[in-house]
Figure (cartoon, rainbow, N blue to C red):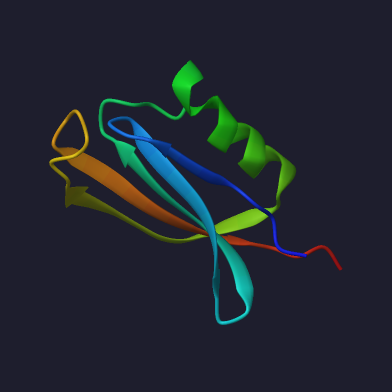
Length: 82
């Protein structure tokens, strides 16, 4: 069973659990003004704390929907327990 998370908290962040090549992933787009330690980001932090993962890709992008006009895109591969 794939983990579920679907949050649209624009202009701070979006987070969506998705499948890529039959592997579970979490795609997060976070405003540069939202830190990973911020309270608003707690649902993503808690999800990642409870799901082993690896960062597959991370990049900074322009995004006018975010409050800073820029965001960090991070793709986490969720590791299935063996």
